[in-house]
Image (cartoon, rainbow, N blue to C red; front, top):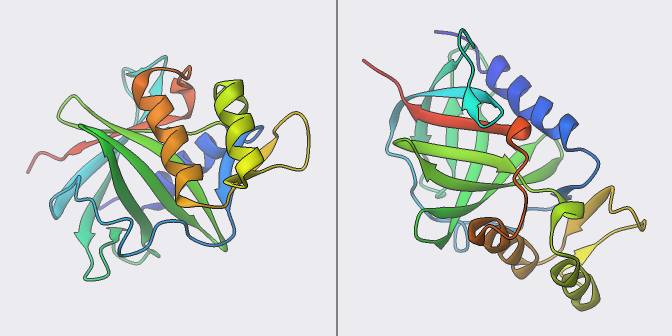
Length: 187
């Protein structure tokens, strides 16, 4: 079985591509109570990076096993590697706010049902509608240190859910070069 290193590299590349504006936090926003959605059954899956919104011909997809924990988070597993840990919150039919543990911090994605799987798109602060972003910052739901919104810190559940809903409604241009499609693997 291939290593989850490639899956993590794909997530990291998505983070780097969207670094000028990604939503992050130092502490988790989703926990066992607020992040308990079940978008995946246990089993084997493929993670494929997208180019221009589609899986490119000849692209290497990474195979991994998904395992739901009693703590209501998911482990994305491969033998001999540290698991990737994700949590999901349903925000609408077929739409999710997604939290990924990335070392000592957390990065946030929008997830939506697509092609029998789940598309993960990194949420990008500068791409949020200005009115929404300003309202969330004024309420303390998001925080940023600069006017370019290079990084926005998610401070509350509302600060995560409202941006994810904006992505779901189509109010945000989705950066498909910072996206991964996760689909069930063939046996």
